[in-house]
Length: 346
Image: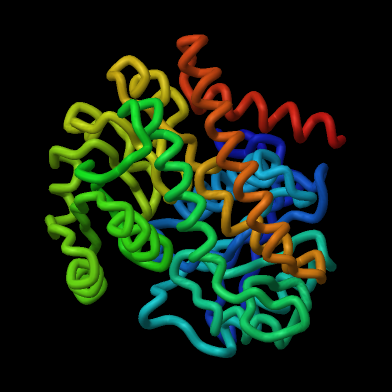
C-alpha cells in the first residue's frame, strides 16, 4: 500500500467485504485538512483488485484537489464498489455499503457517481446519515449532475476563449465522449449555444435520445479520438489522454467532465507541446461537489451554489492564463494551487 504509486499519503484506505450481500468496497480518504472528506461512490466491474485500488486512490486524491479548487470546506475521499452496475445491485448490497460508510463516523460523506443512482443512495441512507445528493430530506438537493454539467459548459466556454479566441460556440464542433448523467445535460447546453455535436457512448439508447434532441452525429466509441472537432469533452471514464490517443487528437482544446483524464501527469506537458489547451478535470467538473457541499451544510442555498460555481469558472480561467503565460502545463499549475490550499488548511 505505502509503495503504491497512487498512494500520495492518504490518511486512510478502508476495505470492506460483506459475504451476505457480495459487497466488495474501498473507501479512500485522501485528506481531511479542509473538512470531512466527501466524494461519490462509483460501481464498476474492475478487471482486478489492483485496478480497483488504483481507481479509488486516484479518485480520492482528485476529490481533495477538486474541493480545494472549488474553495469549499470539505476534504477529499472516494468510494468504489466492485461489481456490474447492471446485474449486481441489490438493496442488501447498498445497505452493507451504508454500514461501511457509517463505520467511519462522519470522516467521509458519500454521494452518487458512475454506476450508482440517487435511488441507490436513498438505500444507503437507511444505514447512515453521511449521504448527500438525495431527493428527500431537509436540505436535499437531488442529483448533482445538472450542476456539474452547467459548470463544465461554462468552463468549456472559458477554455474556448483562450483556445479558439471566442466563447461563442455557434458553428463550433464539440466531440462529447459519454452521454450519461453529466454528458447528456452538457450536450443540451452545447446545442442551446449553437454548437455542432459529435457524440459517442456504449449505451445506444442514450445516444439516440441525445441525438434526437440535439441533432448530434453519432460515432463509434473508438472513432471519437479521430474526429475533426474544435473541442473534445470527455465525460465517461478516465485515462482517455494516453500514448495511444494523443497522436490521433485534432482538437484545439480538451474540456470535459471525466475524472483523471490524463493517464499520467506527464500527458499535460505533451498536450501543451501539441498545442491542445487542457482544462484540468478536477477544476472544470467541480459543480456537482459544490452542490453537494451546500447540502452537507444542512442549509442548502441555490444562490450560494451559483456564486461558488461562478467563482470556480474564474479560477479555471486563472489557471489557464497562468499556464499559458508561463509555458507550463495546466495540470501542473492546478496541482500546485490545490496543494497550497490544502497545506494552508493543515
